[in-house]
Image 1 (cartoon, rainbow over the protein chains, first blue to last red):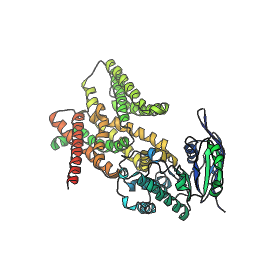
Image 2: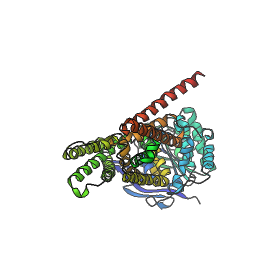
Image 3: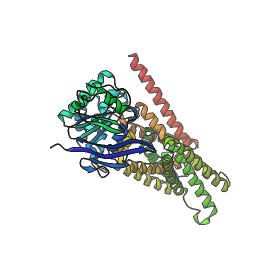
Image 4: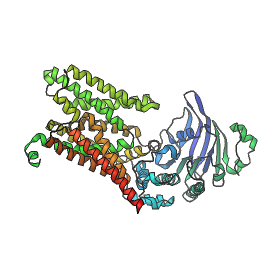
Length: 248
Length: 282
């Protein structure tokens, strides 16, 4: 039986007086590759922040790996890759190796030194994203796409069961986006890493995902990709209040 | 200088204190610079001045505490200031930098009141403002040793967490690290180092010891570890040259150390430019 990794029950959230999320309920099973779609301001990033524990829900319940999210201690099981633009200052004096090594911090625990084979693990994680030749470069010298690969490696090194990616391809050249999603699909298939991906590249990602969730304050659809394809254009537009492109 | 160093205790105090500061100030400075907190160091040094001036005034007024070393009240003010800055930063979430001028002017204002209450400047106060080769006591030296131990213990335990926090704060929080605590402890350690360094470089120039060597190191270092090593190397060189020239030329060491740091920074910038030109030419 597949395991439920994330379960949201009636989750609501508001910033000051603005309701951002209303009665969100859905589950993510182990092995899913879920694309979270929705227009700007639909609450996608807020939803991710709730799952990541950066925000606390006002109502409802979030369970991670079967545990209540506030009591959940094994955050190293969740790898997080944010939008490149707001992640870090690109002049930071660190090598790719140092950045990827830092992905072991939570797993290693407080007051402890990183394991002896940390460098070996760095090499493996970088090889998985095709960046093993860039180990000693400063992170700021890489292109946007390469930096995102390094951040995936930083998440991978902790051997996560679940990866959460918030528009990871913003600022990446169009040609490299395809390869980037191929890599995610490979990690999903070969290492059984569950993926939650917030994206606007619906066309590019459509043949790699297993599930779709449509969000606009509330979840309008959550299910298999094939069922999503059967939804009419009119219905989609009614959810989002404007024309949307359908993925095929 | 070596002969004088062997013979005079005050020189030993200044020299060894300087060598310790030359390591711990740039070491913490790397984190301060990459976290864009350079100005906070400046604000804290001005708060330290308030503690020092207050202590000088009190020991002048109350005979019972005439011998109280001003460094203690300086440390207290600095640590208190760091906590106030954090409170203010949270209060003005979207204008975090506002905390700096508030605390800085507050510190200077209180200092001015104490200085005028103590009826003006004297040489003692001057030595706190710009550092001194002769005024460092054995007690100051011990305090600096203790501060250095605190710095090393803190980094021994929290280096990897502090690195993650410095590189990407959101990621640090998302991966469940105790970001708030690490930051809180970091601010206290920074406050301690600022209070400890002011004996040598002086309150007005303390933050330069945390930023100038790092600024030079960042131009040429590859990676974080190298940045730290080079920062310490540059910091130590500045202290050494600065102290020796202050001793022989009878100048305030704060001035000579900072001018040496700036000289190193200029050399590094020019050398890097030249190296780039050269490699382009080839």
